[in-house]
Structures are given as structure tokens and as C-alpha cells.
Image (cartoon, rainbow, N blue to C red; front, top):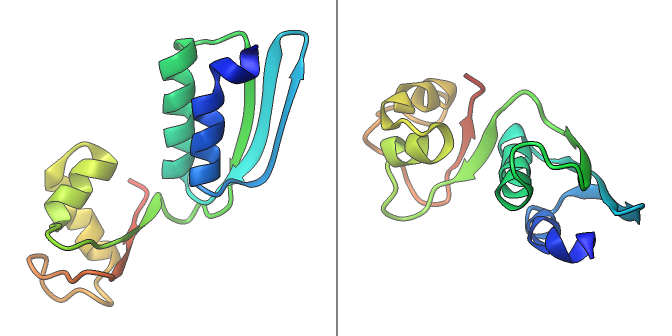
Length: 125
């Protein structure tokens, strides 16, 4: 029953390709374990858990680790995106685009010029 309640979390884990995933149910508590690629992906999972179970759910225990703590996320540029739009997605603030530009200065020479399929580092702030 608890597994069904949190099925959206499990589906998101599959979509994010969570490594070493393990899900068990014990005494009405869902136990979820795995490794997210980045902190951003871990945050997405926690946001989904809180959306379903509230801020402090007692019917789920999640132990999600992060494989690459050196970055907040990695982002592949899509057509029509800007650094500001990408910053808004990850940080909730478009003006943080400067941090993304600085972290990718090896491939970006102008913050107004990015190209589809470039992989950008989204740094920890």
C-alpha cells in the first residue's frame, strides 16, 4: 500500500537512472536506497517525496547518496535556452547565470552564446 502511494517517487528514480536502487516495505514503511548522479537529482527525489508525504513523512525512509558532489548538476543545452533560463531552472534565479558561465569558461566565451548539445556544469553555490 505504501509502495503504491510513493509510486511517483519510484518512477522518478527510474527516469533519473538512480544507481544501486533498492526498495523494500517493512511494517508500513517504504525504505528506498540508491545513488543519484548529482545533488540536483537527489533534490528532485526529495521534493517528490515531500509533495506526496508532506515535510516530514513517517511512512518512508530514503537513503539517497550522490555520486558526483563536485557539481550541482550537468545540463545538456536544448534549442532556445539561455544561461538565464538554465539558472532559473536549477537555482530559481536567472541572475545566477554568471556562476554557470564562470564554471564553463573553458567552453563558453560569451554568456549570450550557447549552443544545443553543449554539456554545461551547473556548479554548487
